[in-house]
Length: 176
Image 1: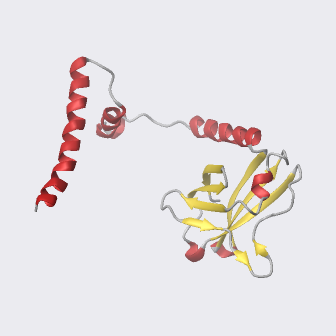
Image 2: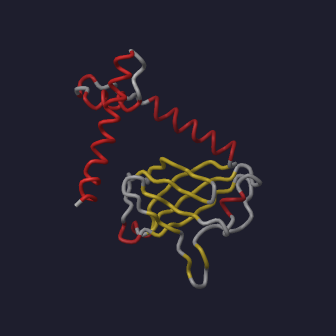
Image 3: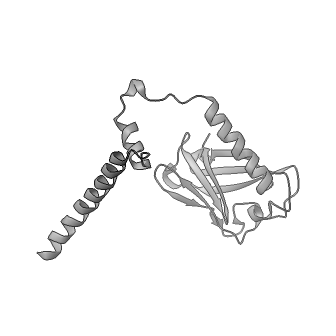
């Protein structure tokens, strides 16, 4: 019985402590915390919410594209469903072969993650062929691929996905 009471009191005490610290900040006239700012934006009526502009996503994609060109030596082509949607093809163009070696290294495991559901897809390995990804040394101005299994068509067109290969994380890709 004592454990059940302690288990119920712990979340209540945590919430009370958070509210108390917010009240102290407001009384001191200090800046709002990020938690309070988040609560304020949720309580804002829909007509007063700030509208996102079409320029912001374009800037984000351009910045991300520049990052991958400079850091990893690749240009991301995209992710498309293949084999009637039972597989997803991730394509990239190599600009700097030395920086892009990680992507073609078969020792580094590759995964595709659906950001909405958290589903993790891997590169399937065929018995006679091996993994369905390019393993040759990268060359400049060539397009390479990785095929991810998509059993049950869990990831669909329009889904936002991330591709992870070793230390490289490519977030926010949209399946065509």
